[in-house]
Image 1 (spheres, helix red, strand yellow):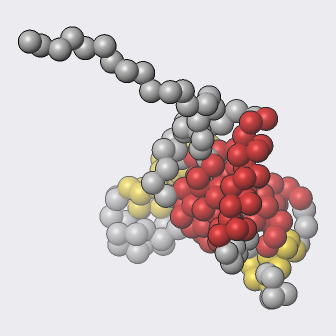
Image 2: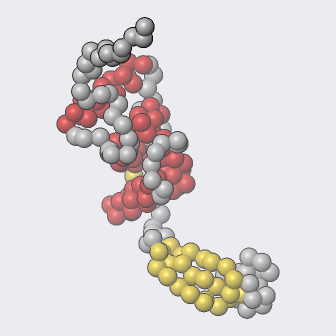
Length: 179
């Protein structure tokens, strides 16, 4: 590992720790004595994604993360949730052990997890992924989501899309009039 400060080719490891399916190493340059951190992660065999137009490209975690982040933008999600979601999907893809994976499978995996995580993020992702061409297709997806919402409770981190109880009639206040 070359030193990021002076470029020297050798360093010594001061500390090693296992973190998030990888190893974090604290290093010290043998030339300038500067300290820096490196992260090592096992890189599994290459995974190729088969796009809708039959092109093949290497799986790119950054693309996956960017798409999920856009869908979850400005949503009340705990810190690290998006990264964890991407990590889980990537791990599952490599765990399947296939060299090629259709992009539709990856998109479905993202939608499945977003649906249980945040309804608004799910609809945002679905509107791009499913390429809704008109408002009726979007409304149909929301109706499906609302229908399934009655069977399962919504995530505790967000309010329901529609009120669960029917709205009652407004109550009149009984104020005394001043004379």
